[in-house]
Length: 119
Image 1 (cartoon, rainbow, N blue to C red):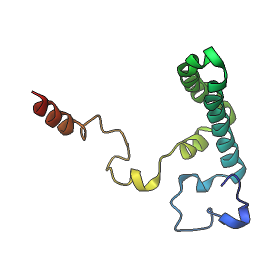
Image 2: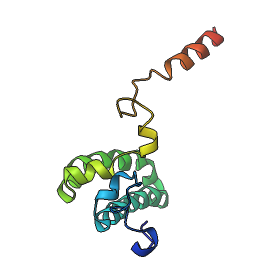
Image 3: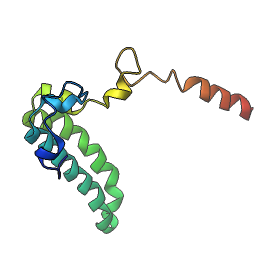
Image 4: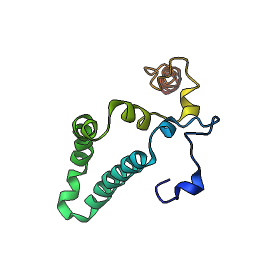
């Protein structure tokens, strides 16, 4: 959507069949969020060119946490962040609570089976 003109992707705000959580937001806000994501990606990718400082890559990743918790709420409202951070609507409709984290309930049987096979 960042490189596509608004006339080509239509106005999701007026389409009733649109399930995109960001459809309620102005496109400039969506583009700003996407641009910030690309800047973070460039920071991660750029670490490989820093020679011995490339070992600090995990610190860059950890630095994204305060960015999300302290900086982004100053740029975007809580409503905008809730829509921009929302997962894909098709994946969240599978669970009854709407929460994608299941506490490891789906993985527990797989891990148990693998552990019994090893012993």
